[in-house]
Length: 472
Image (cartoon, rainbow, N blue to C red; front, side, top):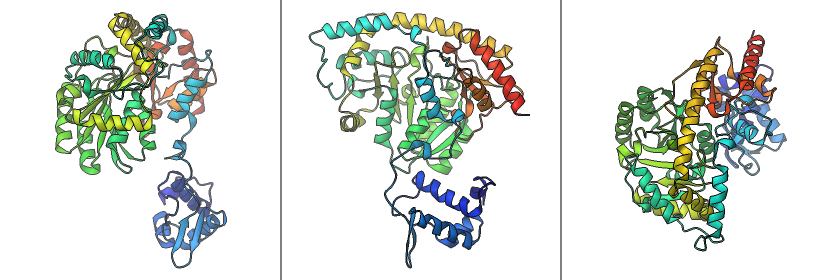
């Protein structure tokens, strides 16, 4: 009956039963040719009469959605529809739809303000140095500007990455690093390698929304664990391991997205112990690591890559256009990951890897990071102060990075606030964009690098006032 009630009182019972079947077919829990539940089973499950289900099934058969087979029941007709991520799971209002938020942030004109986006302003990135490095790579007769990259990626960059990883306590050989076209490509390859449809994956609540979107594309189940300022709630984490037996846990140990929190040593050690006891693998998404002046604890360092796979990227700190990421893993997993990489993309960007390597070895990247960290620290202090003046409560003060997780005052609904701000061409990120459980209704993620200037805060105040009036 709950599934029927969720459809809303405006629908007839027959229409609501039809909606249940539409949704199951759209999200592929019922595939082409699958037998739908019997009339008795569906009536019992939804708390309606058998005659209601009969009428709903007959209508669906009339529409060509179902076919009836004498003596066998009803089956899903036709071919499975192409995968549409928006149709998997509950339909979301656009203010809390993560894919819509991403598209809106990317497609809006330069006049829009984007305090809800997840990247730095172009003016904060070393554009002139990028162009010089690109010209240098193009002029170098030894640079492969027209050929495929080697399967693992540019050796010189992988060798340099081993030195950088060693500073975080992660001791690896260049042969344990596979270059990719950014962090999302790295995570996709790891998921292809480790997961099968129907597996269960553990995510933080809240978490980076694209984890969820990518996992839905891989046809796996998602279980969420509440996240605290010290890391995942350990009691909830252990319960999830016992009840759901997940294959994988994906998280940011340092500079968690969206909260900005950092995993504490106590939580990290206990988390790895639980992972060992329950045969859990961990993907440590470390794309924000270079925002830290002093490296914090890494699960990959504690674990020695026994259960942890680390992924990284230069998209956040250097260039989103020059895509360059990497996977760091145990030696035995490298060859099968390379095979998947070749099967799905036939390589990674050789020119991008060459540009990144040149900026790393000539000192440009180090100098850029020094200035960037100072800019972010100033922006963080200013944003904390301005949000507090507006009545928002900071959930935890991040030690580095660009994200702040803040609670709106007076029980305000963040989606309503975002809707009013969007009318003024300001894109905010309400908390339920990051929360599958939708328990972050009052929260927002702010990107401090995109909060410069008074307009963001003036618009936020007006949006909060308008949301307060509409909620009465």
